[in-house]
Length: 76
Figure 1 (cartoon, rainbow, N blue to C red):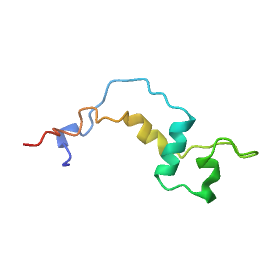
Figure 2 (tube, helix red, strand yellow):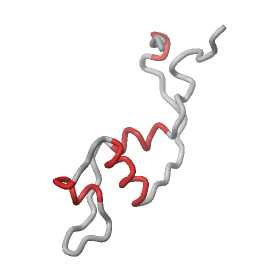
Figure 3 (tube, rainbow, N blue to C red):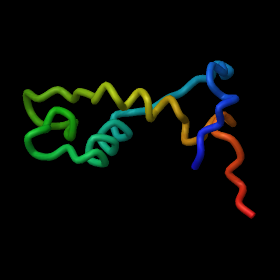
Figure 4 (cartoon, rainbow, N blue to C red):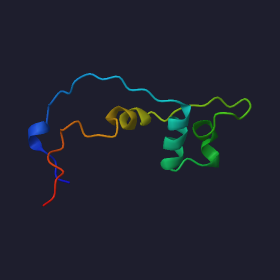
């Protein structure tokens, strides 16, 4: 998908975004977290508090949409 140069510097409307521990766990597994990354990929291991990859905020912030900033996605 090509980038829309008109979107450079565009500011979107504020919105509320919510997630829970399962979203963070799914993200960790999705990017390849394994046994060595236990704090990122578990929420119930004794003496291992769950932590979240800093890059999760980027994915969670997209809300699954493009915010209308990537140009047309219609093909024809």
